[in-house]
Length: 263
Image (cartoon, rainbow, N blue to C red; front, side, top):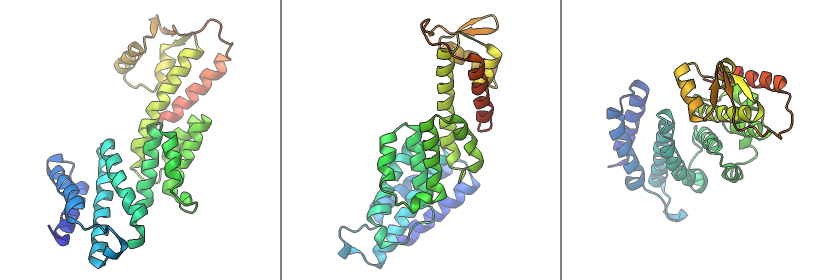
């Protein structure tokens, strides 16, 4: 396969992604493009190997990996996104002197930072951040995950769930949804440690279940005991410090209302 035919395949892939969600049409192209980016497009071993053709191949290979990485987020195949990004790092940091910056580079890097947050890989998050210049950290695509990480560190869940209104692109929504589920678990853990009982109505609202059957299954999965119209939590320590429950439940319900905007 030559450069022109691979470029044509990439353009076809872009059109299909925009016009069709049929995997039977898109998956074969994904596989062909992955092979092309690895086998058929030239990569330099030394700076002396870089000529105009190599530069063109580098740009095309990078474009392929970027398109595939964004598509993997669209179909929620996040393990593939991790693999594509690991390949893209070579183009972003090792080959950057041979070509102009990609128009979506900041976005892809920002999405990877979001991915690390969803996996609670804080150390790796900060390691990746060290590779990003102070100037680039002010880019909206990268600044967004930095603000999310700051809010999570502070425990300001309301700021996290309110961030839907300021996402820099639709691709970030996937990771915000994952974080929303994580926040739900945090609220559940907090509730069972903070209250002796909680009404089913309030619990369902706090945990953002619109389906009673799913809510009941969730209650069972956490081994919560239902007595009448209330949940009795069995994990409370009788020697625990007194907690201002009315204030805390109002705060939790506030988080639930904010979180509802993201679901």
